[in-house]
Length: 226
Image 1 (cartoon, rainbow, N blue to C red):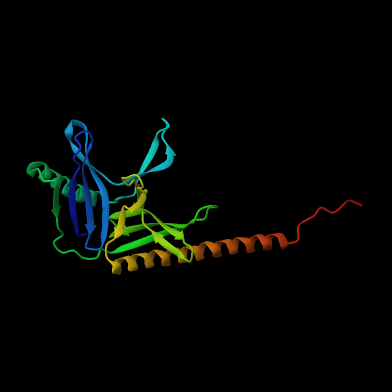
Image 2: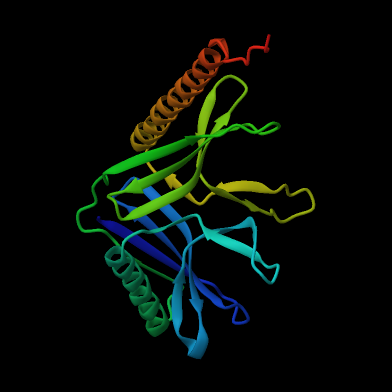
């Protein structure tokens, strides 16, 4: 899968995060907030964007889960090596921004999986995953019930705005870049959601019919002795 990388330095020596990478698949889907972190013995490593889940460790610490990540060892090594190579270039040149463009950017193949989701008080109707060429997955994609219709929401994070009247806003972590790919991707998610929703409804109807048939059968009763 062809991709471009842009790396921006973090100008704060007190932070372990030294740079943030943005990766664009082909020319139509962007992944942001990929961190280059300084680890032990000053060895940098790549950390994918993550969120704090409701799960806790045995020490009662929050468990963080990746929003998106490579799902094959080969692609993980390729992507992480390219990001760290650019970070090495950044350190050598002292530039605050470095990049590497894809040679032949093309729309990546993808597939989607959706699980219908219903919870009282929640406007989330489905949880989806997007698989790019069977080597990278984007999780935490939601089908949301809006005022008029359902729509697709990409994983996002809350950004605090500066200023007295600054309001916090949500920004997408991963998102389509072009209108054409956005429409194609979102339609695939909604089609899959409708199919899975129908499956769940049909399964519920079959279970209800099975229970009704069982209740309508004559029950064996013990006859009283005479």
